[in-house]
Image 1: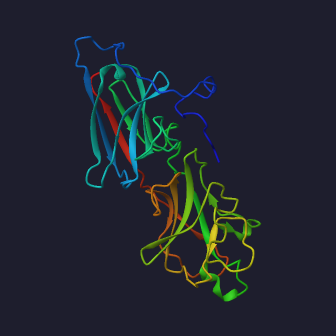
Image 2 (image 1 turned 180 degrees about the vertical axis):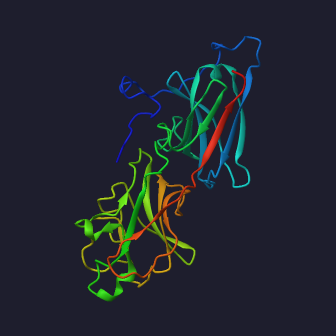
Image 3 (image 1 turned 120 degrees about the vertical axis):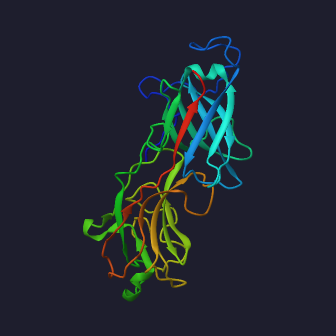
Length: 299
């Protein structure tokens, strides 16, 4: 797992020893802004497919000024309302280089940015930033290289006929080995497997390493036998077939805002087929990712 212990907008080469600080820019006039310009200027945020976080978490925007984060305000969105506008001190705009969107606890939050950076973008000369997960200050990837599959098998059961009650992200032909190829995630994010049956998602476990067991092993309904060291789950007691369900790999914030899958779903297979035990079934890539634009007022 790729873990960033310092803010990811700081250059790695020379700033690894710098302390993490918040800054206030009130009381000074930045370069490029005339003294007679308005004291407050608008920051318009326009998003596409940004998920509703529920009651316990909110979004917070940050402008990076002199390599330190300056908060632009906290907000929530709904599927119908994806745009936000705030007024900021004009001095902030002149030196801002990057916009970062984080997920924060709605209550009892630390004033510094959380580690959960969702979108980011560099601000161009016109005052506009195109926001994506691929920016290094966000997740650092658009998941275009994600690929993989899964197989049906119940390693924790001695019954060879119940293979349709287990789903594992491993490749028997690989030694066995991992069946997923996923980009490493920065601090604040984990992968999670899901099987969706009758419109009800069930987690198969959270993980950061495709070649190791996930956080709940073979799961609470597994049989008595040992499980392989890969992500997956058995549904032995009570018995539950996964054939006909949907398999999803999601990217989840840590801490998580909901027991349901988050909006980032890089791999999906719409229908689990009964192709027999141990046969790898491929997953398709899912292009739907949140995007955004941050547009500053006159610079």
